[in-house]
Amino acid sequence: MLLKGTIIKGIGGFYYVDTNEGIIECRARGKFRKNEILPMVGDKVEIEVSATSSGSVKKIEERANFLIRPAVSNIDKLMIVAAITNPAPDTSLIDKMLIIAAKKGIKGSLCINKSDLDTSNEAEKLKDCYEKAGYRVFVTSAEKGIGLEELRHELSGKITAFAGLSGVGKSSILTLITGKELETGDTSRIERGKHTTRHVELIKTDDGYVFDTPGFSQLEVEDIKASELWEYFPEMAECNGLCRFRGCSHVSEPDCAVKSALEKGDIPQSRYESYVKMYEKLKLIKDWERGNTNGTR
Image (cartoon, rainbow, N blue to C red; front, side):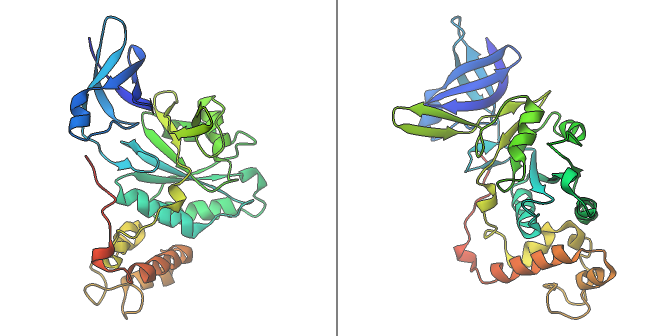
């Protein structure tokens, strides 16, 4: 019997595929090893199920994207979780993660948690900043259950990666959305003798999947050229072709449309500062030093 499904977990050469007939334990066929193709969590696959209900991965569909750490493919959305306080939001880090997501073909969104602790309307100010840039923003309180239904609806039918600094309430949100108690820092562990192996597991929501990406904030943007960075800031991309000089860096040139938009308040100061900070870092990197980290199979 042939079935289609999604790999939600892989441990020790076994792959667990979510299908219309339930979750089926599978092995990968030898041709994948021969061709040095390793099935990944998130892969859309076709499996062949035997009379004993064991399965084998017969075909892996082309991947839309993938991450190396954690090893997950076909991610539809990155949900960046920040807290309005304890810890305070790091807009520079948020901007960096949004750019990394865009570079990998993943749509980025922002979740501002701990809104119940917001005493000066900072959550709405931050929301306005990123909505101006064209991102979906959700204001939540895991403690009070605020905004979670809207967030849950956004995840419908998607594979969503959650990322954020420790203490922002990411694990609490994931637990409330999935109904499954999640470990801080990762989704699951397997004990083998004296060794503990971390692995990624897609957790089922109503009709989608979510997972934690504890290392995403450590990724860098070095594979983006300084001259192309502005393209990853949607509100700056709207100024394309309006600057006086072709190839404007939007940093020091006169008659710059981006700086004009900044002065008018159309581009938030924090977003522009993030751009300049990353631009100055990226322009020091030579082309030959850049790695190709955005491969797809």
